[in-house]
Amino acid sequence: MKRGQYVVIGLGRFGSSLAKELIELGYEVLGLDKDEEAVDEMSEMLTHVVAADSTDEEVLRSLGIRNFDCAVVAIGDDIQASVLTVILLKDIGVKQVVAKALSELHGKVLEKIGADRVIFPERDMGIRVAHQLVSPNLLDYIELSRDYTIAELQVPKRLCGRSLKDLDPRARYGCSVVAINKKNSVIIAPTAEDTLDDQDVMVVIGTNEQIESFENAVIG
Image 1 (tube, one colour):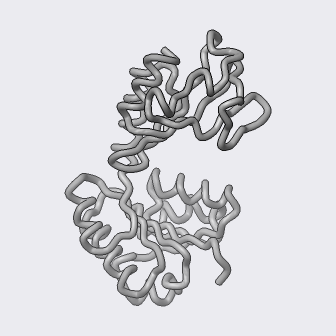
Image 2 (cartoon, helix red, strand yellow):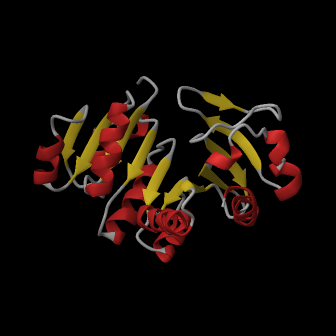
């Protein structure tokens, strides 16, 4: 099979949204759900859609799931089915298995049984919204790991014309500006001489504390 083929198991709100976005990005997607109504709704949007039980090993093998580049287990409300599906996917040799967790405990179980990546859509979205509420200049916030975060900070008018050398975020705050989104272009890995304009967006990487210090001292 060609690279870039995904199977999304569980076509609820998260799974269907993920599957449609993968299609928009140009990938082939097989959607699988035991709910025939959910399958019917997605039948014309995805490459293929199948109504089937993902905890049935024979079904997974007959669909050639092991040949897909990545399987996403997006089952929304049945932890047992989620766990069994991940076990079967790993057992039949799927290269990468990504699983949605409903709770921290569910996530730990998924990690223990071999999921390559565990995601917490509701928790992560809650964290991002909370940060956006308390930091007016923060446009987006993504936790990369326990130690590092990447954030988008909007440049206020008073910094217009200032260079990154003037701000010196690395030396003063420990964080780094890795890109500047301008009105009609994006500067990747900007130099110290690059200047800021009103309404530019700085993409900053560092710890939560470093980014907060930088935002409070320079942006806020």
